[in-house]
Image 1: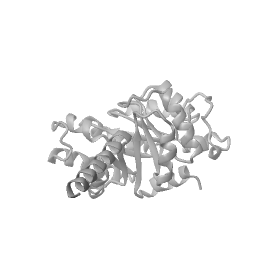
Image 2 (image 1 turned 90 degrees about the vertical axis):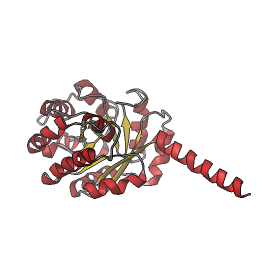
Image 3 (image 1 turned 180 degrees about the vertical axis):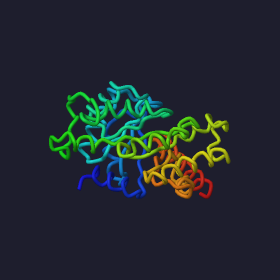
Length: 259
C-alpha cells in the first residue's frame, strides 16, 4: 500500500494524522530527509511562504519519488493555480480562507476530471501509478482540504459539507488568521478562539469528516486533540529549525555554565 492510500484510509477512519509545512526552503533535499521520519504527508505553503509555483515543483517530484504524499496550500481558489499545482504532482490542496460555497465549487471544478469537474488534462507529473489511467481513480486520489479562518467560514461549513462532503478530505483551521477575524488577534488560546475551534470541529464530527488545525509545535497537539482534532498540521521548517537551534544553545549554556 502506498503512503497516499494509507493517508486516505486514515482520513476516512478519522485516525491521528501529522504533516508539517515547508514554505521557505527551496532545497528539495529537505523533504527527502523529512520522508524518513514517518510523516503522513508534507505540506507546502504558497499562500504565506516564499516558495513559488516554480520552486515547489522539484519538491513535489521528490515527494513522489519518496512515496510521501504532498499537499499544497494554494494562494487562493483560482482555477489555473489549482489545475497547474496538481499537474506538477501535488496529491492534495488546502483551500485558504474558505467563506463561500462558490469557492469550494470552483476548486472541485478545477481539480476534478469530468464528470465530477472540468479539469484539463496535462502536466509532466499529473498522474500517479495508483491512478492506472483511470479518471475516476485520479479524482479519488487528489485530496481537497478546506481551511476555516472566520465566522463566515464557520457559518457556511454545514452547507459545504452537506453538499460536498464526499469531495473533501478534511477541514483545517488556520488559528492565527482566525484569531484576528474573531476579535482576539494572535491569541489562539482565548476563550473566543477555543469556542470557534470547538464549533468547527463539532460541525465536522456531525458530518463525519476528518478535521484539525495548524499547531506551532508538538506540545500544542494535546490541546487540539482534546478539542476534537485528528489532523495535526504541525510546525514549519523554519520554526522547527529555530526550535532545534534553541535546544542546542540551551544545552550549550547549561553545559558550559556547569563546566
